[in-house]
Each structure stands twice: as structure tokens, then as C-alpha cells.
Image (cartoon, rainbow, N blue to C red; front, side, top):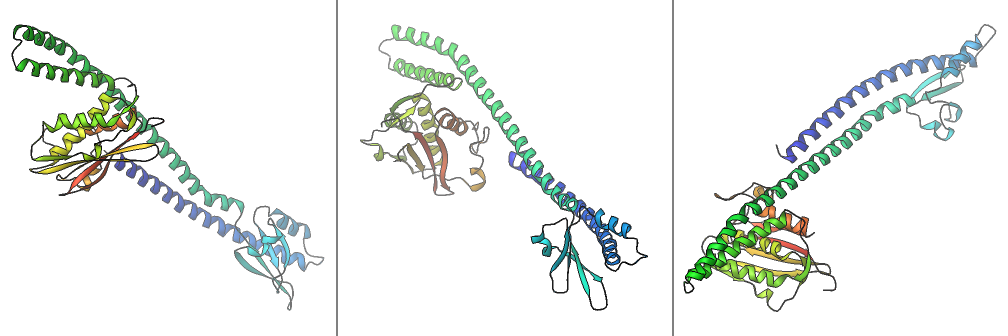
Length: 370
């Protein structure tokens, strides 16, 4: 189950819990309001009897009813709307109570009107669902953060473990190949294929070194990234279709020092260049552009390939996701990890349109005083 779908399900469950809680508390509040209305009717009768008291009136009983109201805000208005008495409420708010009126008939010509509001108990009760929602939201947020952090930590351990093991496994056969290559070079010094074999072995050694660097915290140094990009283009251009044109004029005469680990950044460029070449069927163009601001350098790699549809765009940086028949789905996730976690930069799909092409952007921090 994807994180987005899991989050949606949890949110829906939380909303259902809150909705049920709101219905329950509203029903309970209405029941309490009905009870308070009955109490106000009794309270009004006590006020009426006290106002028209004679020798037969139980004044003490009336006062006990009136004084017994310690929670319901209530006020008495005369016929002109002036406040004549109030209880459990500030005088300035006495005329703003929402329930009532109950007519208090003092005589044939005189009457007063009783208004009351919800007690503090009902007010607090109505806030319960919102407090529940806040607590549920906080709990869900913490759970998602913990789940995401745990998942990232597990992925990091997996990356490190796989990288170190790959570097270790490559070490032994590379050492053996080096020995055999040296033996062949000594025995057949004029053979044209032996130097090519040496270059391929050096290439394998460089790949092993890259895996070793991924398995540990790489050291960043200030250096010009443009020669690294040019070397990558030269290496990859000879290994892709001749029908693909590379436009790299934007790199000519440009010096851009950044903080980087050159072997790992070269790996990122190789991956993006290869993906761009794979996206092109027949003739096409790969264009390199350079942009910058005060603190960052931006390198755009654009191809005129098949493009990426909207649905696929949301998954291209997920480990294991691939649209290629023989792909592993590790190239872009690994490149993103190198740029963002090791270099503090950004790797993003800037734009893509099916049938038109795609643009990936690499953002790197400039070296100080550059």
C-alpha cells in the first residue's frame, strides 16, 4: 500500500470518528438543553412568586431555586429591553443570550422577560469533537512521521549495505583482472585490445569506488563541475546512437565551482544522460543548459524523447520503479540520493510532455567565493 493511500485511509477513518463524535455530543447537548429549559421554567416561576410574594409564599424555597442556578447564564429584561437582573454572565453580554424569552407576568400591566444561554457544561461539550479531532490529527501526524522516518532509515541501511557489499564483491575479480591484464600486456605489448581491456578494468574499478563512496559519507570538495559534465558527455556520446545530437555549447568557456564529490556527481550525469538517450527513438537531441543564482548552480538536461506521462512522473524517483523492460528502477533514486542527501542539492523533473521530451534539473550549491 502506498503512503498516499495509507494516509487517505487514516484521514477518512479520523473524519468518521469525528463525525460520529459530533453527532453523539450534539444529541447529548440537545438533551441537556431541554433539561436546562425545564430548569429555567422552574427558575422563572420562582422569580414570579418572589416578585409577588405574600405571607403564604415560601420565600426561602424560592431563593434556594434562584441561588441554586450556578451554571446557566440568565438575565431579566423589562418591556423596554433594559436589563433588570442577571446571573452567571457579565452585564455587558446579558442582552446577547440566545434562548427565550419566558414571560414573567408581574401584574396585568407589567411583565418582564427571561433569557438564558447554554451552561458552561454544554459549551465545553460542544468543543469535545474538535479537541478529539486535534488529538487524532496530532496522533496521525506523529504516526506518519515515525513511519516515514523508520522507512527512510531502513532504506538508508539497505542502500549502505548493498553498496558496501557490491564494492566488496567487485574488488576480488577486479584485482584478478588487473593481474591478467598486466600479464597480457607484458606478453603481447603490441596487441591493440590489451589497452582497451585496461580502460574497461579501470572503469570497473571506478564503479566499485562509487559504490564504496555511497556506503560511507563522501567528502565534498570545491571544484569546477563543468569539466566533469564534459567528460561524462564525451564518454556517453560514443556509446549512444549516432543519430542523437548533443547540444552542449552552453558549457563552452564556462567555469562553475561547486561543492561536490566528482566521482558521484559524474555518476549522476551518466545516469541522466543515459536515460535521455534511452528516451529517444531514432533521431533526437540532448541539450545541456546552465543557470545560476547567488548561491546555486542549475544544470538542465533536456531530451526530445518520448516524454513521461503524469501518472508515471509521481513514481520515477521511487526505488524499484521502472518503465524499461530490463531496468532495475535504481538509477534515478540513487542519483537523487547522491544529489540531495550527499550534496545538499536537488534533483527534479523540471518538465515533461508525452511525445515532446523531458527536462531534468540538477541543483548544486556553489563553492564559497565562487
